[in-house]
Length: 257
Image 1 (cartoon, one colour):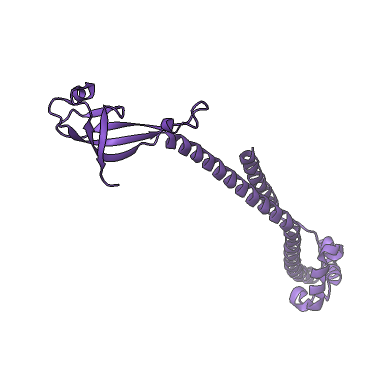
Image 2 (cartoon, helix red, strand yellow):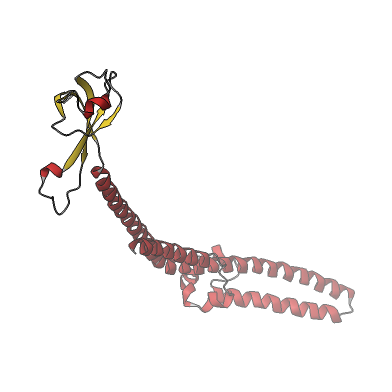
């Protein structure tokens, strides 16, 4: 459950971050009227009024004056075009044609100023959007971190539990090998027949002790806590494993202990 919850939190946080970030990629648009009146652009208007020549050139000292001067140029151009269409005097026509070119040049310059101001306004709006989204991005990032940590901790805990279970199962089947020398108490018995006629009375073995799970009936019986067998390693004997009783075989000595 906690693994799924951690993964869900992490994925949800990532999805929220992606959604909010992609919303910032949408181009910010702004009109010149908004630059003049919207409270969001009060800082931009203050910067323009503090240094009008840098932003407006010689057009005006603030945005409202600039808008009036620009609109006036459009009106002048409209009047010039209207007069040029009705005049029949060649000299007057030439003068109006030159005046039209001059007005067009001024309007083009006003257009460049307008575009620069609109670009600044779009930047201000995008910055405001980013500032508004930043707390949400921070919260989403924190959710992602919490989800990842929860996922990793839960997975790690599950792995440790599995390792403990596997370790418990493995420990019950762990074989402890100890080199030793064994001696038959009955050289003519069944064990001797299994070992072969060439096997000496004392022969090399590996003592294999296998821990045994105690049952409810014999949990206090130490003799049943483990059982053991011998792996015959002596080259003169038949190889194999035997499970003799203490009456049939005797461990003479243990090496490497």
